[in-house]
Image (cartoon, rainbow, N blue to C red; front, side, top):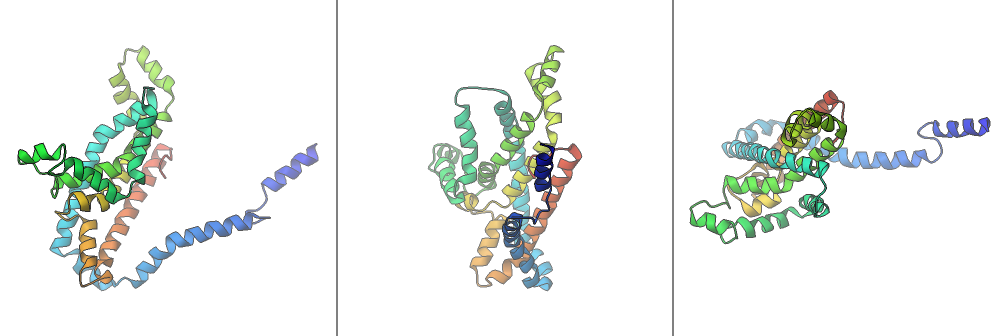
Amino acid sequence: MQVSTNSEQQKTTAGPFAGRGMVLWLLAICMTLYLIGPLVYFLFVLSWPSVPSTLSDPDAIQALITSATSATIATLFMALFGVPLGYVLARFSFPGKSLVSVAIYLPLVFPPVISGIILLILFGPYGLIGEPLTSLGWEVDDTLAGIVLAQVFVAAPFVIVSARSAFSSIDPRLEQVAATLGYNRWSLFWRVSLPLARGGIIAGLMLAWMRALGEFGATVVLAYHPYTIPVFTFVQLSGSNGVASVLPLALFSLGLSMIVIGAIVIVQRSTGKSMVI
């Protein structure tokens, strides 16, 4: 019996390339190369001398300001409304909870342009909400508000799902103990659960901010103007200069993405939890 156990342990602890493990490694390496290869090649074909002039273009700077401003406002809205929704889904059972859970994921699987069309028929000048606002002089389409609405719709799932996962990982008994000390539900959320879940929530907010900054499909339908970085990049790509003119903008987006992902990793390591990456 002991011999059999040792034999099983030897099989389990065998090297990663033993037996058919080589096949798994080859498949994994192929996928990794496919994901990393285009990024590495991009760095080689990029005309580095053109980067400063492209990124200092006033139109590019204005698009960057618009993207950063709208993404930040959208993230604040997602934090204000999305984090409480994640807590409710993690801690309460109610009729229609499964439907709400499904609805949260829909913006992730919708084609972005379809998301923009759905928002347009609601918030556009002839939409259910947009028409009354337009009559009051508050047009949503082709404004910063329209950009924020599009960004919130496509990026909110990152906040809600991360918050729900973070709150679910907290032992409910901690809240029960706090409740015996006289904490009401809001105090439990604000003073107990939220601090404990902050790592996952911050990571989700960072991802949502980056997703909002890079949002194109819904934005271009609902609010083509003012240009965000993705829309400005599309306009430049469609112009006479072609691909070469937008490579510096792609470099900027790549660098910013790496910074955000690095920040997320640092936050999660500091809290000892890995809920997003």
